[in-house]
Length: 198
Length: 86
Image (cartoon, rainbow over all chains, first blue to last red; front, side, top):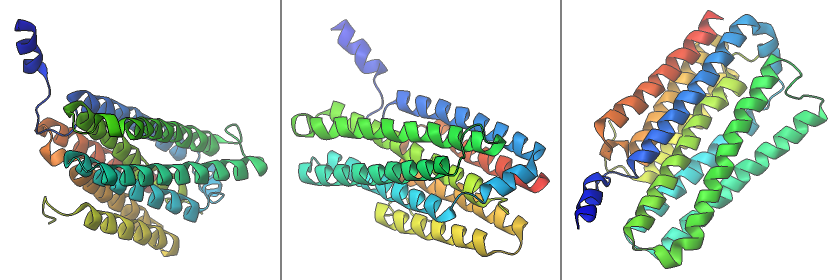
């Protein structure tokens, strides 16, 4: 009994989306990416011409397509979380499937882009810009795959766990992570593909 | 100012429109500094929309809302200053 009281004392507030742990985890990840961006900018200041010319080898429309895939996937995830709160199983399944599909389109687009660059002889050791291009987009890509694995897990558990508080929190946590992945691309895209290219 | 209850689909439309605008503005602009300022300010605005409306930070503990929004500001300042100085 004492143990149950203790557990209810430390549980997350019902009204807050997700758990406090996911907010902490995502913020730490944000700070880590901020440091990558900081080092990118410091290197860009040191080698502005190499960075500007190298950026022109990236296709802004490919970056834009990636942004649109992730933004749309993020919207589907919001709808999936809202449907989870209504216990609307078919809607959760539909929106999770769409979010996964759009995540897969992002991943496919990114893999095609990587293979095009490698075919042109561009690699992480080509120059300073491409080191950051492969490092930052690669780390982001790993986050995308991780988010898709979490979404796939929720999709598989949907029919058995829908209606439980645990599943709702799980969906909210996955949603928070997926939106964070989206927010990262909102900065990665203009930084690598748009700003300063000539 | 967008209401807290703004539909996710409305936010999605705004995000899509801003993404298209910033890309074509950056590609078509003859003034590099304006383009740089515009794309990163738009990126921060889009990030704020996602954090407040999609991540539902408006319902999260206030310190998280503050810290996440501070990160957006820090990112915007870093990227604009880094490109303008260079």
